[in-house]
Length: 172
Image 1: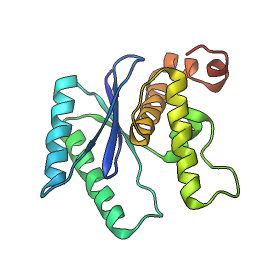
Image 2: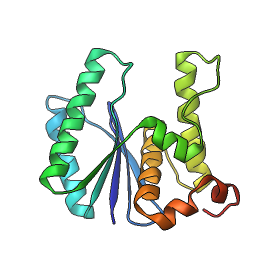
Image 3: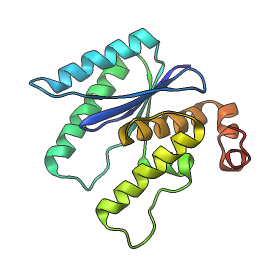
Image 4: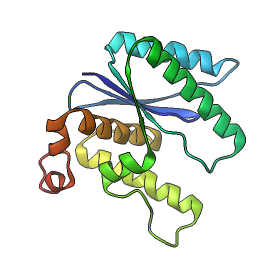
């Protein structure tokens, strides 16, 4: 089972796994036709790595209208590509993968909006480090968290081994 997890944004974080050791990266699609370039890249990833499941972070509110439109269009491309290739598509909320990945989906009280986002991104990067997964940026760390949630959801053995109790015992 090959899963490709996507954290869609201006810079897309992605993580792919057929085993417990993910391959993690990020890409930025800019220029005159970013959606078409994203579609080409996504199709190539799916074919080259025999992806069976796309795990995509869901759209959330609280962003400016241009960012929301861009994100919605990218979601549309990802869904269209996944459906045309008969892939399983999982839409994962931020709260789902964060709760699973690092045990929190909300931030400590009293942090400003900027600090809340930074706190969540740092938690994801710390968890990747703890698992021995090298990430270069927060987009990659978020994609790794989405992938970890998808693996735990689809693979019962991984799900048990990645549960907080086992994680605290150093089982993963």
